[in-house]
Image 1 (cartoon, rainbow, N blue to C red):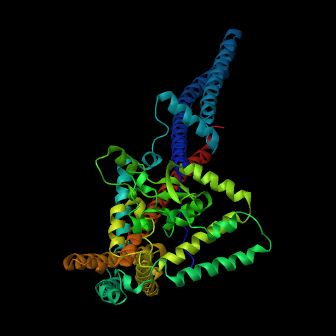
Image 2 (cartoon, rainbow, N blue to C red):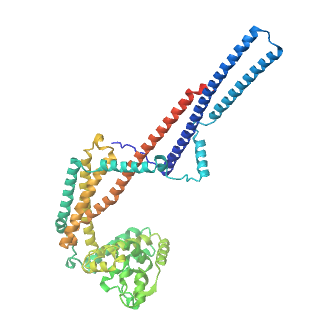
Image 3 (cartoon, rainbow, N blue to C red):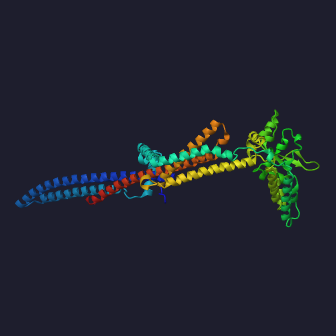
Length: 534
């Protein structure tokens, strides 16, 4: 269904609305002044006409007397001259009066009444500068007035709240159903998750030794197959050495010469980034190319040695690995920048060097992941070494983490599907005549989902806290609820913003139409009385 478009007003448009109102106000003031001057001119004309009429009556009386004298006797030349001068003076006075009146009326016609917006804009801007008024004030406040704007804002907020409130029976039914589903899911999650082994550690007895013959055989066969596949086109180069030599991050000898470092023997996989299931693809590949080992902060020995503590705070560290005459880690530090630069240079020496290093990294991770020591939880060691060490010691590794992430993902998918069904069914009850725009109706739908998810997640958190069982926590449902809090809240704010802007736009448009109406009436009045002062 097509959505109704709502006016979106940016700052420039809002400012132009404010300026338009100021222009209209300037027009109205000019027209009102013009109308007043026209009225004053008409009053003056009426008064002058009355005076002329009075003077005319007196003149007629005098003329009648003169006419009587003329008829009764012959006038002397002096008498004729005085009569002629009297008429000349009278005609001159009437002419002067008419000229003055015409000037007054023409002066009023100098007021500009057409819609020359650019001219008015310049006049208003110049005027505001002359009188020291801030021309960049809020156009809404200029247009509606501060009190009227606040009143309008309250009215719009009230109207929005009324149209998006969950108060009718249909919405309340959907809300009750959604809450029941979310709460039931949160309470059933621990039961289902327990059957799927959620949060459980692995049993080392069910894993292979790190040097198991089957692992070594599978590793060698994979290397041979890769070599044979690439050998025809790339018969020489360092890349074949990279396939078969021991990876540098598997070496622990030589750490005794570096007192602040301890790779903890068999637990070295936790502290070498080459064994990280995610970071290993970057650091492990670079280590293989350059014969360097990169360790995490957790490998720093806890002691009173201030230097050791500084080393730990410094983050990851890399050391050079020696292969002959004895394989061992050297105290020689290698900067991370130099390691990656050397990796880039070696990769450019032969087109197969980098692919072979990546293949070797992948095969090494594959051979280690199903052993008794497994691989550590990805990335955790770099920012929480103690927690990562605790998990690894309790046999919770990358495979356990991958299994739990699948369970979390499935839980999140179930929550999303439930929300989609509720949203779709609720959308079928939309009635344009009763519910307003589609966006306003969707606000109510999202409110239902937000409330239901929040209550469902809260019940699950309370259950987990009361049972003191972290495995009961529905992380998937929690993530979906958090997404609702962020995405739905943002949607609600955007819809409300558009709703408010639309109502204010309508108010502004109404005000401008009223100003145009007043202007039209004044112009009509001027046109009606134009013949009186032409």
